[in-house]
Image (cartoon, rainbow, N blue to C red; front, side):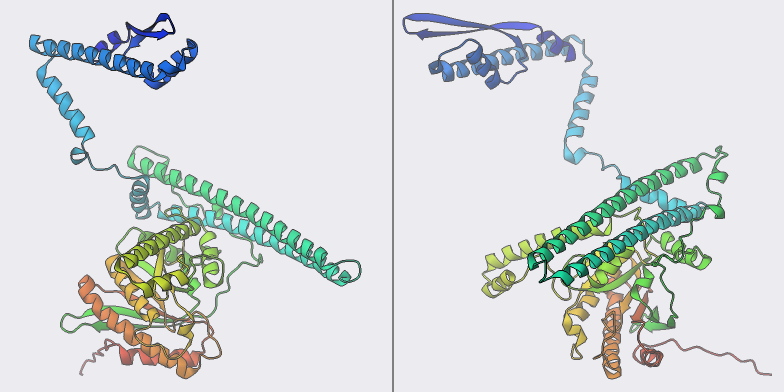
Length: 545
């Protein structure tokens, strides 16, 4: 076929077009090479322009040219087809070879015969990482991640220092201006200076954001390439440099500089652990823990590379691509962002260490926003079709990009200390009142989160017991006891439902209370837990003499 196509490229035909212009009879003759590679409309336009043809023949010329090209092309195709058939009849072409070529072309262009999709880069990297983290190279991987973490932390510290100096300098300038207000300066001068200060802060923040983004992108690429190379080298048993490559060099571990103002203080953590059995006939054992801790302590990396810290990080890395994931419930407002409160603190912790496996926190939030808008649009279309006027008016009043109390979105992480998945549960101010019930959106949101844990291999989940992250004045001892009893009983019911969801898999549920709660209150809650859950009793065996 390629040879025939080569011959047809040299064929030249003359296109003739006759027309009258006044009393004159004119003939346009144009040589054309077949097959014609140029678009017929473009060729027609060139002919009109080059030969200065009158406009009244434009449409007729275009039609004649198209018919000529189509007719001559069909003739060439017919000749090639007849020549191909003669070649098959005469035995010049192997019929079986031709049939195989047709079958191959058909299977490659038809979806039902297409081969399965090739594994993506993310899937390949996940498999490679899982193999390495369960090999002697695991400590080298963790050391490299720690060095990258310290590097990003130092950049963030430099950013914070520079922003602090800028704000102090701007504060001094504003104080001077305010002293001159009403004397030599007016309100317009103050507003102009404030706008200038804001613009300067934005420029500096954008500069550091760009630098951090570039640094994390470089780290991610370097890390992934190094992991792939190390895995390939390990497959080669004759490579003598492997032992040196994965050898741990303690002197190479970078430690961050103390006293930079970003060292997280470790406070005394209160903790009680329980083993319970739930179920009517087939009982399932679960582990419960009650902790007094900051919820972000499960996310933060420690600057010092102690053995205990490394063990936590190793456990998280080992279970990253496993059926034993760890989750955390964050209580957030209805806006999908990271600009204030616990959301900003959580995003700050996420950005302190490069995520080598999943998109960054901001990118994940942008995807969630798009999904929420799409879901709201689909729901609005459904309401419009069913004629729900009341629901339609509520949708108009509500910001479509916000979520409702009880709804939650999920982010994935490989760069946090002890968790892989964060459930961002939306709650409103009603959780601070003392009259919520088991049907409250926040409680129902916990039920849906536990259901997701069952269907997606999350075997450890940390829950704020009081449905708040910080204590306030209205949260008295009776308030805390009442709220804890409600959450304990509801979670117990949800865990009993789990048996029908996942067949009865043993799980760990951690109940977290704020760090500011008193020890007395903590131990009251600790005494309440075994009264609500069926705690396994211990047997003491003594020998008779």
